[in-house]
Image 1 (cartoon, rainbow, N blue to C red):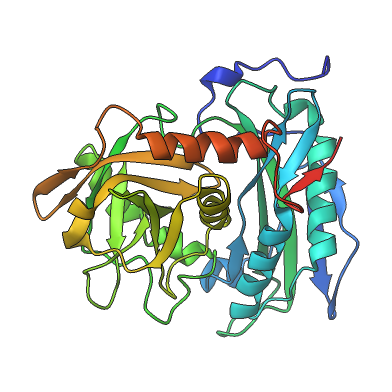
Image 2 (image 1 turned 180 degrees about the vertical axis):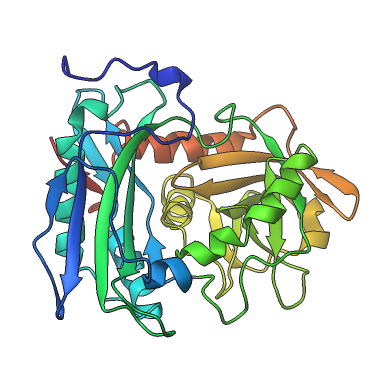
Length: 341
């Protein structure tokens, strides 16, 4: 604990801080090498890399947590590994084995142990694993070589204010096509969201609500996060669609809602014109964990959920339970926690 970096942890936002080491592995001639820890945070790749021209890349987001006794743990890295495998498969990239993925995560976290924020500061160590297509290539085809890498950075809350309600606005832009790559964590989904995100922020909203691309009647995602709501009779409801990214946080919250809070859980359609059915709402994901949604503006009309200023009671319980599991204060379901130290 004495070697922890002296950083104003409570003041951290969600931004990049260069740490000492990152993990890099190369795929060539049909196989991945063993990978290594390096200190250089720059990658040297061919100008003709498919990642640069055709978007052949995917990534993950996950966190390492410091517990009350000073130890470090990862939250469900096996699920991140599986999701990255699905993304790689969809983009014709070589998959990373679950064992290699988790071992690489462990190595890079322990190599940067001094950057894992102390317990109770509200900060965590964010991990960004990614795979990119590289090598000399010109035509639209899969790359001849690939890089799998992981860097880490200590971070604070994704949205300013932490667990405080924020407002969203619906957008006419689509996050992903109905049969596209919406269910994979690929960069193209996020580059296309930059403009609607800016448009929302220009109107003083935290982000935008994406509706289903076919009918624009159902909520799909809340910015770069999944959406959930609590009905007035205490049911946990979250959208389902083949173009929604399957959030590990969301599925963890579904388990917490059912097994820890005793709520009925429904994964299905959430219609934008039926917001009156919900008492609370939130955005969830690795970066934000849970961000309470105070209100949603749709077609010029603002709908307020529990409050624009206060967190709803069920949302608060969900957050406290899940964050408690992640930081070791609440007993976790079997297999969710990977202890590193």
